[in-house]
Amino acid sequence: MKSFKLRTWTRADIPALAKYLNNKKIWDNCRDALPYPYTEKDAEQFISFVEGQSEQNNYCIEINHEAVGNISFIRGTDVERYNAELGYWLAEPYWNQGIMSEAIKQAVEDYLSHSDTVRIHAHVYENNPASMKVLEKAGFHKCGILRKACFKNSRFVDLHCYELLKL
Image (cartoon, rainbow, N blue to C red):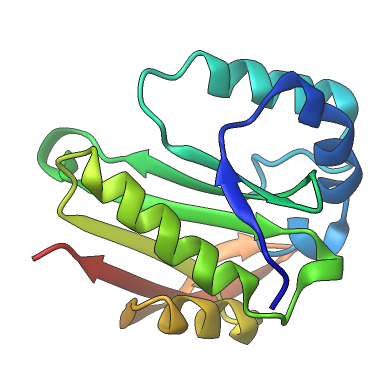
């Protein structure tokens, strides 16, 4: 496995972020709110958003001194305020190398160490078994499948739900 490090995002990451996230294969497995095509302007907006956050909940994955992915935690609200949703992506040249499972383990450990979150959950579309395997290798457990829960790429798809509890 290639060595990587987790760190905060910086303005210097804008070109790499735009280069790697402008990939339809990545977009196909993310929410439609992620712009596609993904431009440097989109990258600038993301970096500005991250810079304005009050807690560390976006982790840049760096390999060979270049930003190649992200792991994020979005806190729930109201009665779900002790939950966080995990989101992640990795540049295609680094797929299927075990990097993301290890990166998620490290990010989860760090995130839980400075937050009062007790449950982290993640959702994966039915056509992404590699991402399901990533979560399982990172210690998450499948807790259900929501049938035809999402409308992505002009069709309804099942949503596989995963969770990790801090106990």
